[in-house]
Image (cartoon, rainbow, N blue to C red; front, side, top):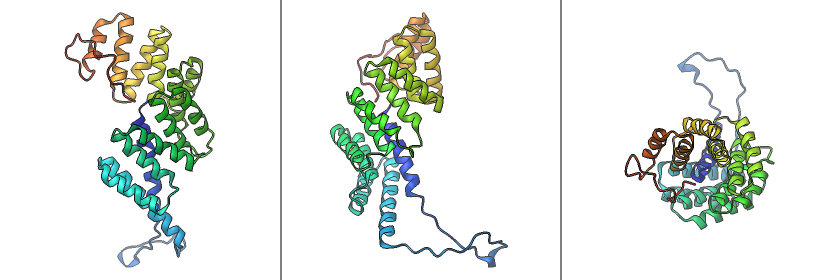
Length: 271
């Protein structure tokens, strides 16, 4: 599970909302042959609607700036959205992502928590805060957030919360709960990266190395490898007795100095 990936998925969803304004354009019949199949609409925006649209426009611009890596512009737009609507959970989510990318871990957590406070039933907000909790040493506490996310009838990506819940339950030492959630996640999405990686780790912990290898191979196909997945893949191959395969995985670990190096198992682990 990677916190950054989880948060950016929320921004992508938010961008879709920000771009959801509908324009009813009547064709120019002098420039071509058209058949009108829908009635004309006269759309009048009241002041509240104009403020709402302005807020979503600002959030959309914030998301675009964030994807460009322009954190200053993203923050400016997110704060503009908050000026329009101080209770915008989406704006606090953007600020949380920005803080996380700046290395301001505690501020990121406060903003994710604020988003949940403002939208206590929102699955995306709950999933994001749970991911932050888990990534910051509070795995057991995060499980309640994922469970609440799954209670949101409008939550469209249950595999994300289930995959995170499984990975975090594993971190919390709750293997049975982890497997239950991971299997459910893979039923929704067979290529869920968090679930595949966590299942590989779970089977490795259980000394079921052939199954661990199978899940890890699926994980490596589903998304580009990161340090954690490469290290676990190497460890699995060690236990399977394939030293050559283990060495190949270790060569790919960032910072590895030689083909026979074991990497640094105590190095920074991706969250």
